Image 1 (spheres, protein in one colour):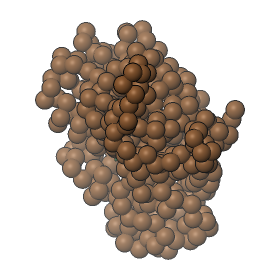
Image 2 (cartoon, rainbow, N blue to C red):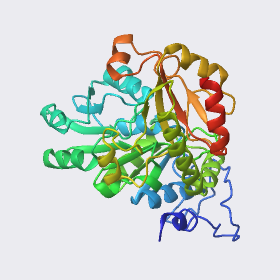
Image 3 (spheres, protein in one colour):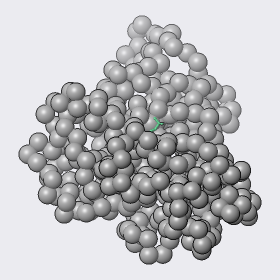
Length: 377
Ligand SMILES: *Cc1c(COP(=O)(O)O)cnc(C)c1O
């Protein structure tokens, strides 16, 4: 079964009781139990809920894992995965990781003596060099944010397998349509389902998927114990959003490629960062592990003034954080997602005052280009 078929026919599309072509929203906290039964499927909705089950089973199928878990946000999914580790453990994490993940690692989990070390994951030798006696995991994001740096997933997995480490990949930018880290040997995939998976800028949600059943039991224990679960209502919205993932991404990705091409030729644009561009750093690695470049790109303008004026004048794009919605969203990382980073760290990461990130939506690309042309004038 191909991906477009699997998102529609994965066993979670029809309500088994009524035949409805939509899984009902089971707004129940508790369930009537048969006292003599030894097989109680549902007893309490933190532990299990039929609407959330349908979503968890859907994402497990799409990522080709054995079990999926739905959380109340991407950060709840990531923090729950971090909770698998213990005091004294050392974890290597990509240095341009999502800001919230950086904060959880360095300002929350460090309090419990889990040592997160930020490193450049694009250099495999560097990864190998930084593994210590107590290293337990490698956490990657590819492409990364906002400069779309590419990490070699199979290369990381090979090092991890040799040293007996767990690998975790944040697959938010790609979704299982474009990239399936579990197929490449990664142990845990996490998502901010708030972005492309839901796709409509109306839900905050997180997902995690694993293949190994022992790891699945451990993550279920955390989900049920920590309790950062996704509600039935939001599980339903996400199930609905996922049904159109492929058509949305196909359109958005085509538009992103056209917009990237147009930006590259614009006289006021300095550089365009997009994995689909020929000659872009990591472009070959990206295409060896993914089906497409995605729908997020960033670019620098030749002056800060041009960047700020662009942000003031842009019309069809929302100005804000987040990405992956039906609407184009432009963000200005130095004042938004990366505002809290010290200026030296920002500069070191290449996040400059003339950088703009674009998440391309479902508008007609001709209109987007026209709008970008006016905003850059
Ligand atoms: C948004 C995002 C997150 C955090 O997810 P929330 O749903 O906002 O909690 C994690 N990783 C990446 C790559 C993201 O873009």
